[in-house]
Length: 76
Image 1 (cartoon, rainbow, N blue to C red):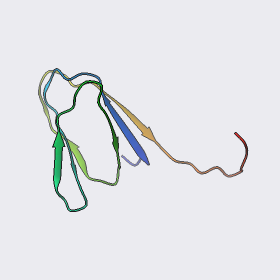
Image 2: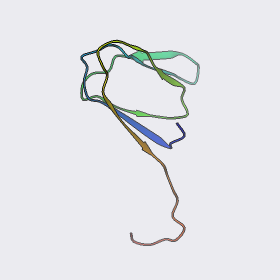
Image 3: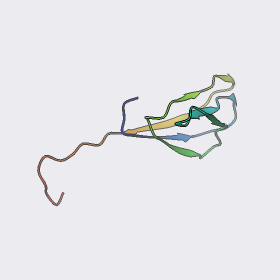
């Protein structure tokens, strides 16, 4: 994605597989298994992936935020 900031919230955890993986600046893989209610904040500049779900269905809510600088300054 090309968002400035991304949040992912996991709505369930009754599935097998679907681990979230990201790679730090040294290209070292970090992975974790999502749990129901867990929200992660992603830096879209870091490489990341999600493993295949082998059993069940994974439900998640993605929020993509884009920063837009205001042309005119105002209180609102």
